[in-house]
Length: 143
Figure 1 (tube, rainbow, N blue to C red):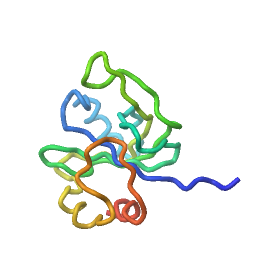
Figure 2 (figure 1 turned 180 degrees about the horizontal axis):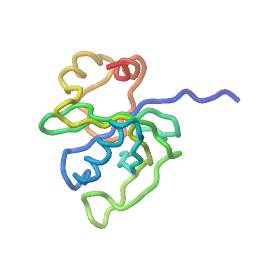
Figure 3 (figure 1 turned 90 degrees about the vertical axis):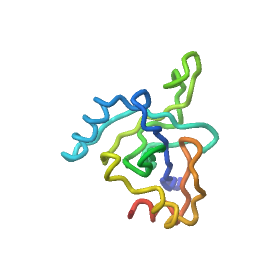
């Protein structure tokens, strides 16, 4: 049986404290700066293919100072449904992942730079869990 090639996905964060607790965010930045990983459960969206362990993930902060602020690996197989992070009573798909790098938004890979460089990737990113196809996935990794 042939091994499946890993894939790359972009997930979103709106920059709100409800979307990423500020204390947890600061701790994850500190951990990854010291070379550790930071495990997290993150919303993934629907209809973007089933993620598998080893797939690459990037966190795109939206809103002010938008751009890529994290990269890591997906740990879970597929998605699991849990209560939505901002809509009580609603369920949403999540993945388990670990950030290998998480930086302050002031040090981000800016959206404008991504948009001008990743010409095989359609912008704007409207939903979490968006798959990044080759060659844009390799370009994103190198940036």
